[in-house]
Image (cartoon, rainbow, N blue to C red; front, side):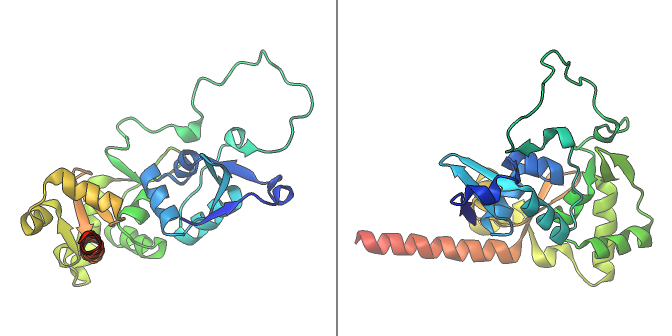
Length: 237
């Protein structure tokens, strides 16, 4: 995991910092996906204390630019390191109603729709390529949570059609959970935990109810795990 220790605080004092969860929320991806990016060294974290890891605004924007993520960043939730100045109204009431950008139309939920960032991350597709797919199949979108969203079943259908046109069959590059269970004699939970632990890329289909695992990632992780296991056994002899 790529990290920077705070040794020159004067260089970081003007920076804005985010927790892992906040950074994931602003990119509209899961916290687990954010940890994978950190583990792969695609984003650098700042270790403030032994149990306090943060991400700077610069790193967050740099990652968003490289991945094509859309960042929705409410000003009032940005963490600041500057000392508080001026008077503060201690009696001011908190905003209880969500902003327009945080709302979603009726029937639009995270179970039924992907955000733009989730599509790019889940299907490992670049923004330009997805733009082509949207236009070719007239994929309808809605505006929710301050970003562009798409119905999950529509996204899965059009990307499947596009892959077929390009001569790509999903089964050529991806395992279903059942495939892995049959090949290696594992249970469903074991498959999921192994994939999450070893950073195997996962794509969701059927409205998020079916997981597909990238074959190249799975085989590489399996071989590495077997090698480590063999080494451990040899040391015990």
